[in-house]
Length: 260
Image (cartoon, rainbow, N blue to C red; front, side, top):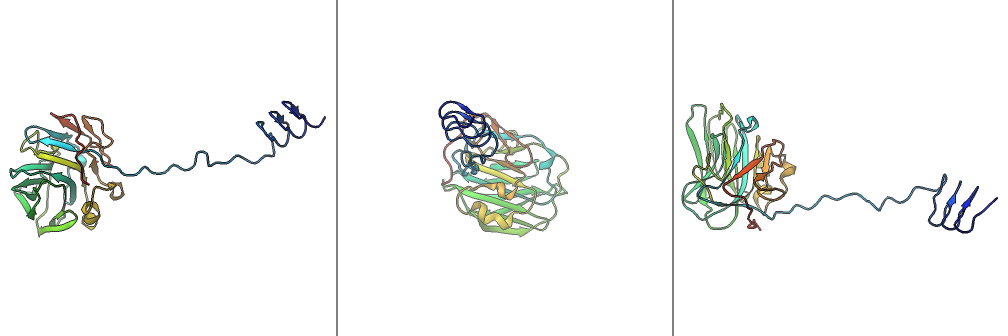
């Protein structure tokens, strides 16, 4: 027996239509048992990386809103750190933007930015920016502390720097976005794309802050809170390596006011 012309099955060679070839080829709707090449692979293709999109931020009321972050030992940074965030505000009051371990962070007052930390003797050391940013526009604030320097970058450009002593943190305490701790000295404005590194990112300060928020995963942050994008209230997921999720306190919605 040789060929099946229609709806049948060939014992040896070919199937012309709707059948199954026992050995070689199938022309239509059938199945080749042995010799046919594998099918094309472009049906599934190679998945592409989704584009980076920033559509949400957190808007804090300056009364009691803040984001609480648990006291994790990996935020107990002993010497060198970098903090970056986008902020928008008009207030002249003293307000904390970010605070870690009750020992170091960023606050603003009279429109100026301050990098602050407490050294081994528990004395507070600060660096003040040379210019103000409380103009109602978004600005990137990136601060860097090393064993020998302190620096503030505004919108990717070095704004102020000095030298300092060593930093010592002896216990992992509360951490917060938008307050000192537990809602103290609250921030009134919007905050977006907050990140912290346990290393010096000054070489990347321009790329991180000169235009609009970018994908920070390239720079391997310890913690990175996107402040709404990819989050489900009241949790701000940590997109870094630290596993330090934040919890929204006294507010549960995101703002769509973002840097553009």
